[in-house]
Length: 232
Image: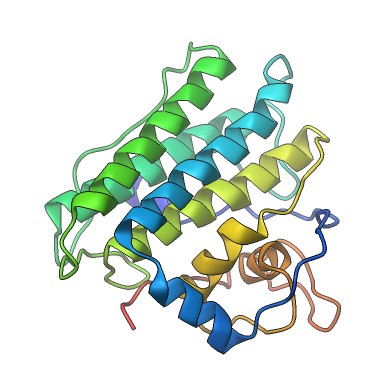
């Protein structure tokens, strides 16, 4: 798997998620909440996103992981590899802090490992990213093709990877896809300054990532979206 695949997301054509009754934040309030989070807060959100995603996917442990999520070029199993590569890679970038390139460390899951062990690997990768975010100084910056970023930025990237690809995989296995607004909203505020107001965090994230439409906005074309990791 090449370095650019770290940020390439498989497209999906799901029908939405179950969203609980929570207020829809305005851009200013969401950004304010995101900016107020400490490195420890961001680290905890990464770990929670991994727990949420893997808990759902454990219900498909005995399923056929050679199937492909809707609209994706990857199998479900390959998507797990992408997640491990991405989340661990963000920890590596924040550790090495290159200014113009990706790092040479690549993470992957044992292709012969059972799915529960692979999901454990995702949780390990999330813990490593969380530890790196907690220990990185506020002035730390590292290269990313979608914007040089800091600790909170890389934490938000990990959250997006876990929630969005978790949503892709849950759809492939016909699992219930519950909203995770408390996790999604800070990541959206940090990485998607163009996000539209008036919608729940999960629905907004799925729109930003080209997965679903919103009531007042069509779905973004696959491959034509990206986040902005720059520190603002």
